[in-house]
Length: 352
Ligand code: FE
Image (tube, rainbow, N blue to C red):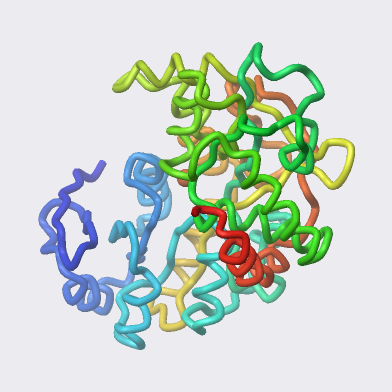
C-alpha cells in the first residue's frame, strides 16, 4: 500500500509514493534506473484509480508513479518531447485522446488482450488509444413534471413542447460538443445546426455550471430536464459529503434518448501509450490489467461508469437505471466532427 503525497507544481498535482521527490525530472531519471516501474499522467482523480493501481503493483511488482493533471496534458507532453517521463496517459473524452493522437504524442499498440477486451468501437483502429469505461450522455428528467414519452430522443429536446424547460452546461464543453458531433455524424451539419438552435430556444436559462448544477436547477423548479453524464447521477445519489445532492438526484429520472432510433450517445474514459515511452512493456501490462475483469469492475464501479469489457457486472445503482442501446458510431467519427460541432455552437450563439 502506498501513501500519496500531493505537491502542486506548474499547476499540476503530482502524487507519488512517499519517499520519492516530486518532480518530472526525478520521475524521468528514476525511470532509467529502475526497470520495474511505469509513469502515468492522469486526468482521472486519485480516488478513482489508486485502488486498482495498488493491486496492479502488488500483482506485477511494477511501481506506478502518477502525475495527476487537471489540464494541460497535451501541452506538457509536447513541451517535454522525447524527454517526457510519461509512459502512459489516462484521460476522459474521445476528443482529448484524439487530440493527443493528432499531435503525434501516442504510439500504436498491438495487444491481443486489449483487442479481445475492448470492443472495436471503443478503441483506435491502429491501437493509438483504448477505451476503458463508457458513460452515456442522458437526459435527467423531473420525476413528475416530465410525462412519459415527452423526451424519448435528443430530437425531442428541440421541439416546441420543451420551450423554457431545459437546462444545460456550456455548449462548448467537451461533453456537449461530442454529443453534437454525434448528431452531425448521424444527420449532417445542417440538421445539427437546426437542432442546436432549437434547443437553445428551449433553454430555461443561459448555459452555466456543470452537469450536477442542472439537476439542482431541476430540483428547484428552474427547468424540467437537463443533459448529463450517467455517472454524475451515481455521484449525487451517494454523496455523503454533500448530502443535499442526494435530494437533487432523487428529483429526477435517467432517460436514455434515442432508444427507438440510433441509441444514446456514449463517450469513454481511456488510456494510451506515449510516443516516447521508456517503460513501454510495463505500460502495456498496465493497460492490459485495466482491461481485465478485476480492474474493469473496480474502475467502473468507483465512478458509476460502464465497463467496456463484455460480461463485467454493472454497479447495482448503475444497473438500476436500466439497460440501453448505445449509439454504435465509431468514436473516431465523433472526434472528426468535433470542430464542426464547435462551429455550430458559435453559429447559433448557444451560450449567448
Ligand atoms: Fe465529468
